[in-house]
Structure formats: structure tokens, C-alpha cells
Amino acid sequence: MLADAPFIGFIPVRDLAAARAFYAGTLGLRVVADTPFALVLDAGGTMLRVTPVPGLDARPFTVAGWNVPDIDAAVRALAGRGVQFNRYDGMTQDEQGIWAAPGGDRVAWFTDPDGNTLSVSQPSSSRR
Image 1: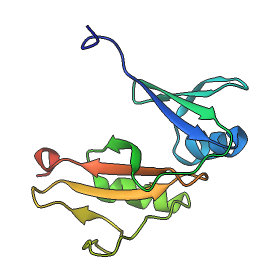
Image 2 (image 1 turned 180 degrees about the vertical axis):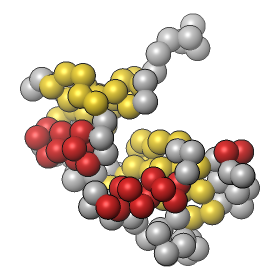
Image 3 (image 1 turned 90 degrees about the vertical axis):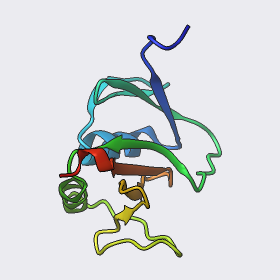
């Protein structure tokens, strides 16, 4: 029933103004609507609703991510905008913070102002 329905993503935040500065300003997502109830963004054709919630405790796992055609370029561009990439014990990450999965996919993680973990990834099928 939902296979053909457009997906909507949700990310909880404490401060919508800080979220707008990060998601629209730093990440470059287009703002569709900005209300007291949600910051609605276009995330590559998918609706992303950044929603204020009280008492947010960010979880230690990835809540949203983007597939990119060139992860090295994406990480450099985001780092140039002030994004800091997470390092994890026990994971071999390169100097940019990119981890190569055993199957060849590459992933780098970062957090938003509320501590939500986000990622950029490049599937091995898109590498040359």
C-alpha cells in the first residue's frame, strides 16, 4: 500500500532557528516551509520535517543520511562549511573521517546542533 507513496523524514530538534541555520545554511537544503511546528526542507526530492521537541536526548545512531556520488568531495565541502566528522573507536577511518565498509561502501558521520547523527555515504556501485 505505501510502496508508491512519497516518504517523509523526521528529525527532532530543540531549537528550530539553530536547525534552520544548520540544515539550510550549512547543508544547503532548500526550505519549503518554516512554521512554529516544523522546518520543512527539500532533501533531494524527499520531504524532511525538522520538528521541535522538548527534552530531546539525541540517540547514538544515524537518524538520516545522504547518498552522494563522490564522498571525498562531499566531506571536503561540508568540512569547508564547518562540519566536523565523527571518529569512532574500533573503526578504521581515513584522514577525512571516512570509513570503508567490507563491501566497499564508504560512510562518514557528523552531528547536527542537537547531537543527531547524520551521514553521507557512497555506495560501492557508484565508485569507479
